[in-house]
Image (cartoon, rainbow, N blue to C red; front, side):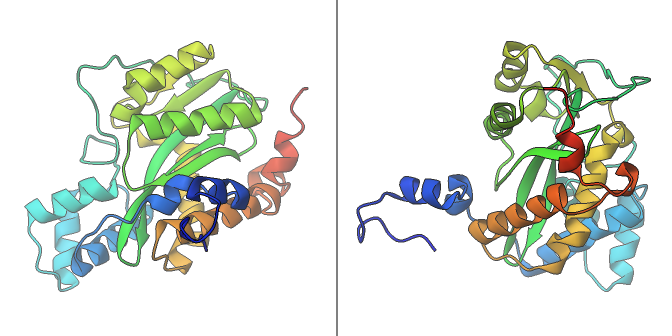
Length: 272
């Protein structure tokens, strides 16, 4: 637990550095919603992994059968917040800026054979006891190694760019970084960062959730193996829990696609 700086000489910034705690997770509070709305959003989050092809009408029937008094307008709003993604255009975390340039999808037919060849980045919704927050993560496609991540109660381009910057500083840079067409990833600050580092920009086709399939699988793994098993109350406890989980995921959890070696073992085989 951090101590109020008026009682000690160390500032909150310095305490966070010493404890290796993300300062944003200390200050950020979960986004507030009613208890019933949070329950609906939690069900939506779990239902997506079972029936990602469901649209508004099918989901509306599902909730009515569960006893919820909900209309289309309310459900559509909660789907937008939660980030429901289907294979066609729906309200979701991918908030597209119609004026921004969309880059082509570069991974179709590409043989991904080494570390730091292709990274994928995305944002997902995280249910909490009294609200929700967002997780942004970057995965190395060849090894499934999570090279960077962060949590926030807002989805800003600056936040995503800072996570990319930290990942590059820690792990080097990829040849290609793939994302969806969300406004965070078409923003000037994000695009300029990738161009400055001479990273090729790749973007999913509109409505094609399967183009970013590896990080979509990561979301399923993180949520079923960790998020749904715990009830986090604040950003700091969520950050610390995810910090421990990603160490487990990268360094201890064997992957079937990697012949049950760990992502870290495979990632460290990259050429010097």
